[in-house]
Length: 277
Image (cartoon, rainbow, N blue to C red; front, top):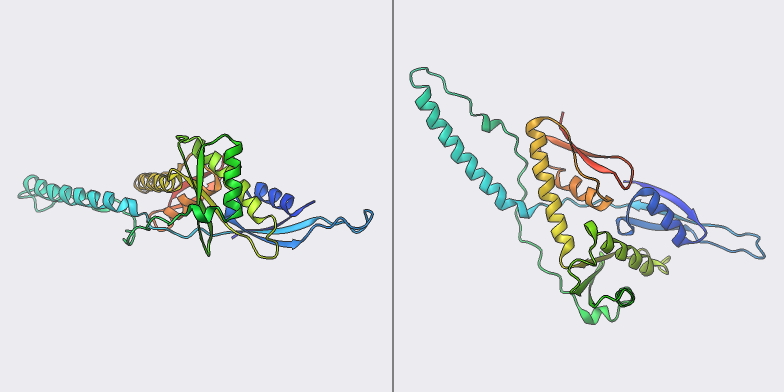
């Protein structure tokens, strides 16, 4: 877990410098104000703000979407083994030796523990009209000329905002870049006066993009990890932002036969999947 300090003329400026240098978004760190800025008197005694950014750990979430696919693969594998055994008996009758079943040696990942999927969060328009962050996001949408409405859900982990609109992906952007930018701006707004009360996490979604993207990344990670485990050769995934790389690392943390690490500089930093020694 990384923990670094940064300075700036204001707390917001120090946070901005830190996020750029660490290559993370504001919802991926905890922010501690070490020293607030001070203008001093007649220029004397002025001091910069200092903040400490502590990178959060992403919990490992079982890939529930892959359970049905894995069961299907297991059924196919059992059928193929039965077919191979029949062929062995026919081809090796009288030899006293059967062919080895190579499919049994193929690497398999640890099976996730199945549990009930998370129910849809009870987003509320009434709550959105009370929260400053939701009202600020609504103002941003209006200024962007977007015909959309904001609803909100709040718990101990932070505030989740959902945008309902008919923009057909306009608010998502390429790989979620527009949505990430909105989330970053609203997070700065929400936390600008929370130096004493602590950081408040903001998450923004629209059209169910966050869940779909995570599901796609997890399936992609698993498919490439199987190739690496079988071939014994490393595989470099396409460049991703810090959040998406974290999803890949978490998805493969318990995958047998492979390890992951990141290489490169932002914005071209990518996850490398390598065979386990």
